[in-house]
Length: 348
Image 1 (cartoon, rainbow, N blue to C red):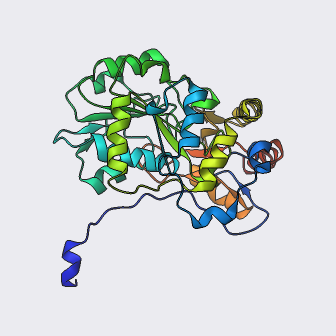
Image 2: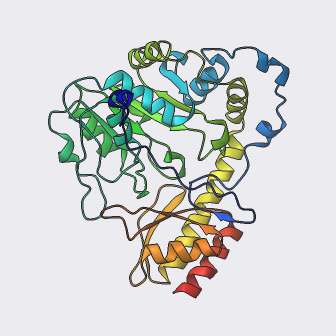
């Protein structure tokens, strides 16, 4: 080993879903929305000549639209390059004690990566046998709490009363609720932020707003929380949001009718597909997301994953304890899901 390598920060990186380069595939592995962004977004002119200028460091246009949409002050909104950037900034800002932060053993697999990268001690309480969070696991002393609701990759959502119970038991630390999928059927914790100044709610434009390629995420909370995060951001990278993301993100929020219509289409397809595959012997976890977490009573998840891949249908397989016989299947268009259903019939 070279001498300089002794000072290298070594981490096990997050592994995102495969991004295949082939054409004519069905991509159901990364929870993207199968429908395009709002027509308002597609029609909005962006003056590309202005790319020579730095963007607004405060992303005022986007922040104001988000605040107005949710009925908040703009001082209660923080924006970043996707919810990953927002969450990483929150970890950096709020988790600085010597106590373990808490998040489930089966959840978004970036949480432990950030904790390792930033030297944050952590503990991962196990979900129960039905893959539900046990609230009592979060009643003990800790350095912070992170809950994805709905959870990923399971798709299970817990009611607002459940989340509030956890927040009530943790008012001396910051509680982060990651709501990347909440628009597809979850109950948002946003109504609680005026009661609990330690609650941070994080959202993304990548799923329900069909804008994964522009990388837009945001957090909502008390003015005090947002001020602390902003101070860290401006000590790290002032210009996180690019100009097209600011402009087009704001435009997306102006088309609520299209947003709700698209979400409803995904949910309808999800429920239809769930019913169909249950008839083939699949167990499907309750989902409030744009994906399903499935397992078959006789055929291994890995076998289905590999056979689907041979047919250029990509789903997500996790070779991890407790979930290595499950597949996470993003909900695509009706035609895409019908094609996958036909393949599953053949495999079964």
